[in-house]
Length: 128
Image (cartoon, rainbow, N blue to C red; front, side, top):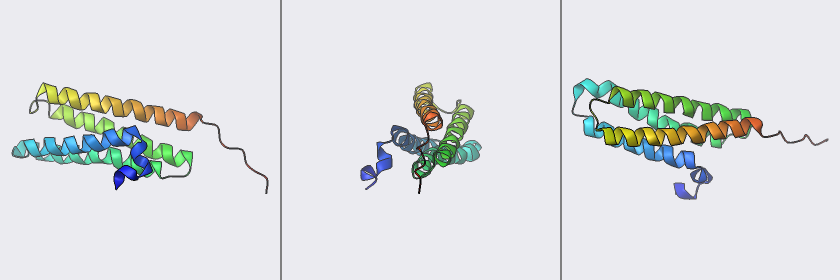
């Protein structure tokens, strides 16, 4: 079960997983409007990519690898914001505000994770 996996302790992962579900629900709600078909697919993929990249980064052993995937997740969060903006005329302002608030939280957490990964001292090498 995912909740017993170590990555579930990462708040950014949990929030991103929730966002992916919300984006999927949003896409389903607007799915009947052909004019938004391309945007909805991109929104769903971008939202799912955030959690996927956090999960993949979390599994990396080296800090530079972890940071790279967290940066990918940050880029996907920015992309997701853009797709939500492009759908602003089709969604309620309450829903959009909730999504942007969620994306802001994810972005803050990712920036903290990236900064922490860059400033954490490297472990000392042990002589053989």
